[in-house]
Image 1 (cartoon, rainbow, N blue to C red):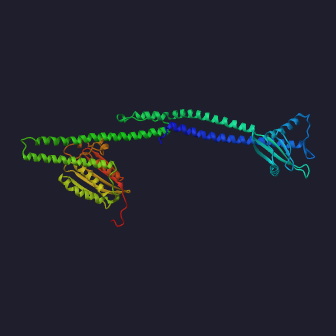
Image 2: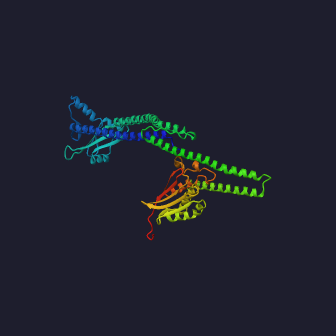
Image 3: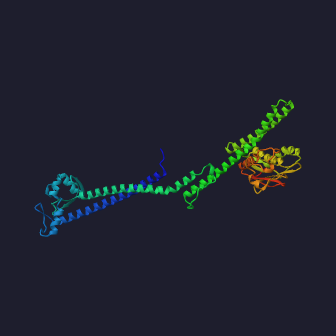
Length: 472
């Protein structure tokens, strides 16, 4: 089922709610009016019946009304009270019946009369002219005489009044609901107008003006919450698009150079004067460039899988000190070949939880980065320690350092400080981005302090776990 527009939904809900309220109120008014009219009719009938009994006398079994006919009030009362009036004797024989009851055809059998005598009181009877309410009373002038006296009142006026009231209320409710629906739709439109303007401003923001933001009214209501949420989402989109643009530009730059070299070497190898040695050198250079492109592509694929959440990390106890010592031993020959002094220090086991393979890769990236940017004769020191429930790894070098304006961008993809961007230094600026991702996945923080010509210090802090009971 297709959902209704918000404006229509609000109008329908408002109208239905109002209809329910009005229906309940109308039913209450109807019930109250019925009760009041019924009570009034009952009181009037009982009053007439009691008053009529005072004027009723029985002589030799014949009923007669004795009253002062010259008194207008008594005459009027008798005329009104006897409009629907009849008397039965003890055997059920009809003694007196008013023309009104005779016209209605109310002639009861002795059995029915006996039933009235056994259950006197009020009873409603259906007639051709509507409901008739009868008051049945047993009068005993002497111990052996019993008469059933019935006084009635036709309730057609009361029923007509109720019917007119119901019709009036029904029409008023329908007219009120129609007016309420129109007003409600107008009010809903007015209420949703700020949301429509907000939607128009949102639609005006595209890929070319992601820096724009939706204005917040300052009312601190739901619309402001929507605007603030949209602005926050837009900030994330702008940052992501900026990273994609930077990524695309950096990737094109990184691919352009090796492709140009490969093309140039291929053109040189096609010259007729090229010797076998020259061809071998050309092919060896091309293989180096292919290896460089392969490493670049592998790094890009790794980061893409990381962004997609396809990489699952283990969560096992890892001795970070032992892992750092192993990584330092692996890279010590590489550092020695560059004339660098690589040392590793640690005070006993330092346990953390994580993926040993990825933590090893994190340390390899930091040490490889230090080796690349430390001149011959420099020093690199890796230290593992534990303090205040945190495991800490520092990698300090005496390298060329990083300018202060480059530090905030150091972990961005394809970013390399100007002083480090040279063909003599391998890498595409993806290593530190991958290191930052590994640190985040281990609930760790990675920071750097550096100054040009003074070296750099990378610091990793991650939650430590208690040492096993048998650990020394």
